[in-house]
Length: 302
Image (cartoon, rainbow, N blue to C red; front, side, top):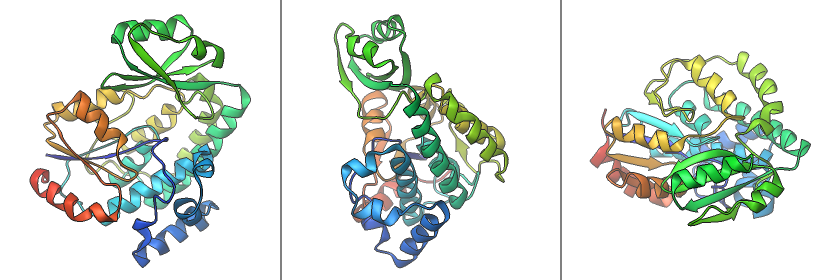
């Protein structure tokens, strides 16, 4: 059984759309999205430098655009039974599951990036990846400092978020702490100011129920209502991402292989560590499409 998964912020790299817009139809589509959201995705995805694409309001639409273009090129409709996305990747996953159109996905993620950047500017805060160590000791160290486990990624990786000074003190026994270059404490109450504007936009969107099983970042559960999917995407901004539970759900559903959409690499790495019995394929560029097709042939079909 095949699943399609979509990465979140931090996965972006310079030039990551170059291979996907060699196809003229894909380039035209990207131009349409750029015009609709007033953001030059072609520049951001081909010639912008690392600093420019790291900005929250740029990174998020860029990542979703990459996911949607790579999914379009993959052409795996009807061959996967399940989709999931990490953080902003949940918008990509919902779009390919048919909950809303790709254009609406781009409008939603554009607003998300803007509102989260605004919220991040209100109070200094940050995030740090905690790698290894005993899970319970790590979680206790995070909460003892008044921080939040904003991303519980499984595979020995938990991302703490909150006050900058508290993050500097974080040093759980047996674990390594790596500060992340992000604008704020995403998926915590620091992002609450971004929620209401997103909720207002979501209320105007037309939604459909997912055409395939769609796993939620909240708890790894399968969500069958399109409106609930959208509500959870909005609330996720200020609440933790439980990717560990999504991976457990993939295993429980009987998934044997996952294809991670562009910009791929992060999620297959987590799956390789946490659920190695599930085969992984990272779709990084158009050059990978033939090999991806072979992988899908092995695992595809509902």
